Length: 110
Length: 464
Ligand SMILES: [Zn+2]
Image (cartoon, rainbow over all chains, first blue to last red; front, side):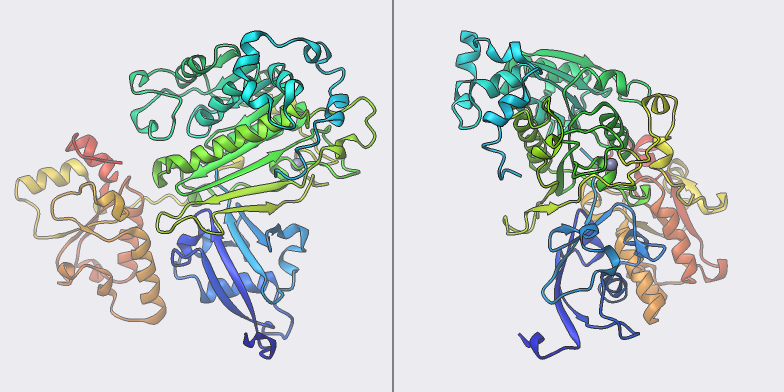
């Protein structure tokens, strides 16, 4: 609603699936008002979002289940509006208002 | 995934399949076949031709568990002519809530034999081939080469990468699914299959194109640990059968003779279907999601242009799948003076030799609810870690992490978990927070967790 006039944050939804929701308060969907720019004034990217989520949304201290060596850990797919982030430029993708970002952990059981 | 596939099997599919099963496609159906398959043959897009393609097809189902059972039922029911099943395990009672192709009376039987017995009862027309052992780098190519399509119904990443690699090299379409706890995933790979190294066009991805690296082992949960809902894994297995039947009946996997642009003919948008099942809420808009994936990756280790992967290499142990899928995990091993066996703890308690102490059980509350050692207090491991992190971050009294009974600083603490790893980490965490008061308070780990308790102390304990 206010996002048209409020240029300082970008409203997005962030979803977790495949067990990752466990790290985020057991909640699968979060509405996030992401700062529109990072500390250096550059537009917010997925890379920035991941860092932001670790610092602000993750209650569980097991950060390494989400991020390893400053990158998303192997075995987690990132989807931007339901498309693999590799189709969109991965960490460099600039977040747009109302984007849906889904983090899904790949499963192996059966 | 359904979109656009319905009318593909008409003239396209028919010409594509020439030279593949020409004889088979022109024969008459037997009376038995005609009656048995009539309800599916009259579905638009299927027809007699689709049915004959199924009858002429050979499908390999790897894994006869929660995915493989429901998948196999529909593959057999639909009349796929030759069905191979690979699995080295035997039927256990804890399988039966989801592995619907087995039976209480067949506990202890090889899963492959049990499932085939069930499938014969359903439809005795197909030929069933039993491979009663696990798929290995050594036997994979020999087995997979005998089939037209592979269904990955396994339960571990090493086998998943192995299956995909061999399917790439042998040009076999692969229908892959996985499921744990309350989630499921499904993806069709290598379909239509094109030779390894071909990258000048749009081709279907392999498993490695989509999932470059396996998750670190510590982050993975198995059905044995995390649990699994029968309908969730069942749904994925049934969907797998649906995709396999569609591919075979419509000859989506077959390349035609004049092959310039043909692989693209049948290339559908690579899609990962995910299913999430909330026990707390009814079916909602995000229960199923179809996610758009990329195609074949130029630099893919298995199917990309400079791939050095070969069948001979795989057979000789290169790449090493076990190693690829297991990064060494930190080995928690406390010094012996901080550990006590379940048997010794029990014996000391019975003899009244244990001082007044507190026993913390760090299992999840679902596990704890089935039973615990008398006097144990449940503090689930995840919650404990979260509290410990909060205390470190925001300050506050470290003893808040403990149940109120343990607030006296000299009361010894014993920690027990499910199998003996979390409890050791808990001991370390509590010490880090200074709760051992520089060694004045004893904090001990019960070795091997409740699993050891069942083995050493109480065989009737309801351990899951
Ligand atoms: Zn690939």
